[in-house]
Image 1: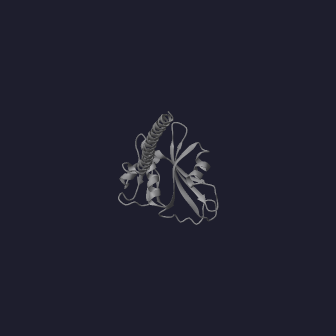
Image 2: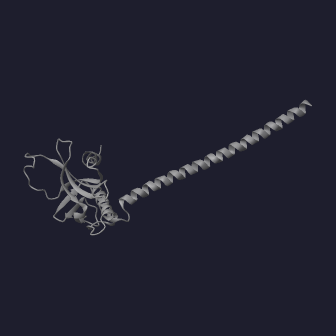
Image 3: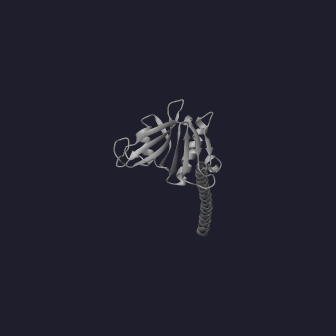
Length: 210
């Protein structure tokens, strides 16, 4: 089971929410906290999750989730309504990079992901969600390449790829159908020729008998 599926099953489905995107992150500037709130030291993995409620009117949240080392469970640590999001900083609009910042009304987080691709997918889904669910005062997206905000987007490229595959499959089926049609036509011609030959042979045989 993928991390997104596990997160969705453990935290969001029970809360009547649907997980739209999740990305594993690390702080670019680590906070020096020798002991965690649980009272002991430990390593953990952090995820930033984007979810929407199933109940209408839909509400969208950004949630920080942690999974402590040696544990299969997930813990919600912080949550913001998407309306509290003021700015998304993609860091570099020219070069793909794994870093991004989220700026809220009352704070900010500076993150780095495992790869530029993971960051791109998350930011793109976040941008699309903001455009869909925030009627006004939409958050500002700065230092983001055009493919994250539309145009040649990853989602569009994926859709184009699927469409292209369907077209190729359809073309292959059409070509196969044409070939089968030609085979059937030739088979019919051969059948007619064989019947004509049989009729001619029968007539000749009857003539010689006479």
